[in-house]
Length: 178
Image (cartoon, rainbow, N blue to C red; front, side):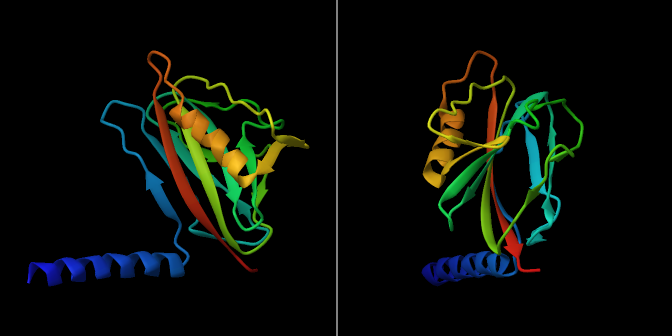
């Protein structure tokens, strides 16, 4: 009896997951720190974007923080360092204020339908971002998807400095045809 209930519960969870994916809802994986530690709200302003439509995120932290954003396009096997960049080098944000990212200095748009993986890393201290091996494309750094994802992971796992806290979140954005 318990086995059937567990299987039924797992089937229900899988059905809910598939329903959210098929309806285009943005999925988020988040790490929730203990109260008092750095906490970041990072979410798209909309659950689904059309091709060519500007993509924006809401971000808010309970403490001052530095924000790093990466985009992984698995379909084309390419990745981008979105923030900081040559148009917006300053990536420090103040506590308890709502921000919309990007904030007018540049625009992010999906140029084809599908999904895009966004990786966000926030830290109470400025992190040294190693861009060696990446290509400079205008104001942005690009590379193979695995290279960019590796740079994001390197920021997440580096040993923290004293008093440094980090938060990492990943979002999957859905881009639909116009």
